[in-house]
Each structure stands twice: as structure tokens, then as C-alpha cells.
Image 1 (cartoon, helix red, strand yellow):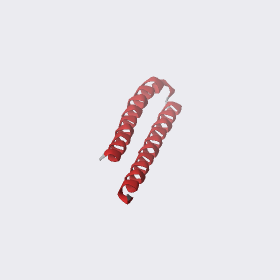
Image 2 (cartoon, helix red, strand yellow; image 1 turned 45 degrees about the vertical axis):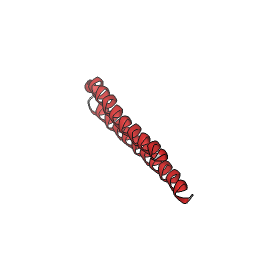
Image 3 (tube, one colour; image 1 turned 60 degrees about the horizontal axis):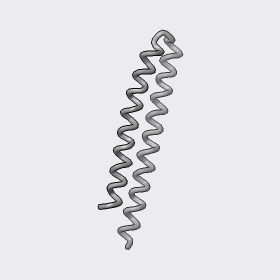
Length: 75
């Protein structure tokens, strides 16, 4: 019984860490893109495209972490 409870706690803890890490990563990407746009407004379009691609990669890694945590519940 204790191992099943620990599985749920570990999955919840891992999912929380994955989401927090993804949020911090996307926040840093947004800050960097805004700083780049503030310094050089003429590169705003290029910075926005790069930001969207990088945010998608971070979000994909976050979803991968969440899926691994959900799989832990069933093993």
C-alpha cells in the first residue's frame, strides 16, 4: 500500500517540477525576446519567430516530462 502512495506522490512531484521548469524556460525566452526587440526594433520579427520556435521546444520537453510522470502511475 505504501508503494502505491509513493508512486502517486512521485508522479505529482515530477509533474510539478516539469511544469515549473517549462514555465521558467518560456518566461526567460520571452524576456530575452523583449530585450532584443527593445535594443534593436528592426529585428522584432526575427526575434519573435525565434522565440516561438524555442518556446515550442521547451513546451515539448515539458509535455514529455508530464507524459513520463503519467506513465509512472501505471507501472
